[in-house]
Amino acid sequence: MKLTEYTIKVDPDGSIYFLYNDDSPLRELGKMQSVRASHVEWSVEEQAWVVWINEPTLYVDPFNGLKEEVKPLRKRLDHSFKNRDDAIQAEINVLNDRLANGVDIKALFN
Image (cartoon, one colour):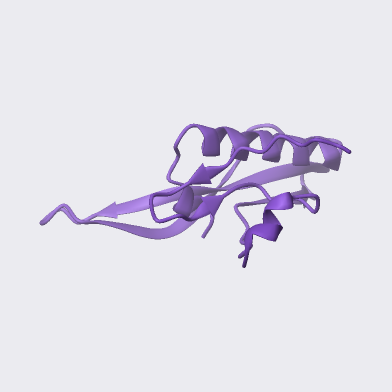
């Protein structure tokens, strides 16, 4: 049996966030929703794979200070990759780091 390590974020409302893969045992816990937090795409100009991450964005009303999530911006990782597998691993590393370090998770997964 292969053991896989997961970085999991649990919100106070009980929402659970993690990077999905087909071996995830968490599917057995109940209904799941899957949304993209990033994209790996081929760059014709660079002839290489690039990683785009959804960056959380927050609008703060200057009059009353209320914060409102808005559609995330796509931010490209600085490095491009010759091999798609390397790009996917970089994507996984960045997103797991953000889960572990308290980035605004809900905005990543919009």
